[in-house]
Length: 223
Image (cartoon, rainbow, N blue to C red; front, side):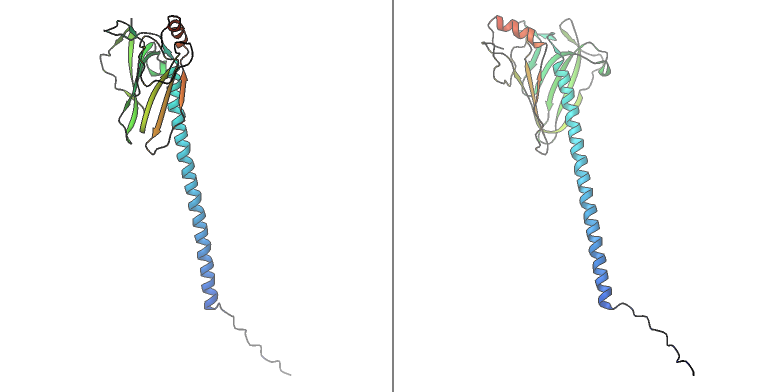
């Protein structure tokens, strides 16, 4: 008895609907993957921008805090009208005082620190000009030293000053420091970036101001 011949089974292919469905699923998966990757990339970029901004703030405020706190009651000039020694001059956009210069910034010793606000809008910056002080006078360098750019890209910057009143209590913040022969007790620096972001307020106490403030209070003067 002869066996029946076995016919080969025809392989069943994918239908058009199955191919379209698979393609749609693949496209959806790729879109989800790229969307997730894009969101992760943006998150990382935002994190880097925030980290850079925070590092910039810490560096600038740290430098300002160290330099301001190092202010000394040393005269850098004499007022021609009152003949008073000038130990601190300040307003909302500029302040000048003497502090010892660290070795990494120069030769060391007492130097006039001249902080000034330059520009505004979206191009504001704070400049620092240094000058050697000897015998109550600021000595000009033979080769003028260009000012150092401490920070740029600011919308605004402001300095304010505070000291004791006639009753020995902390007075109000002042935009202008007129007691040039004395140091203020506190200095406030407020900065705002070009994008409108406000920096944390920086308030620095001047340890060397206590002696001059005490002497002025004993004489009944208002700082």
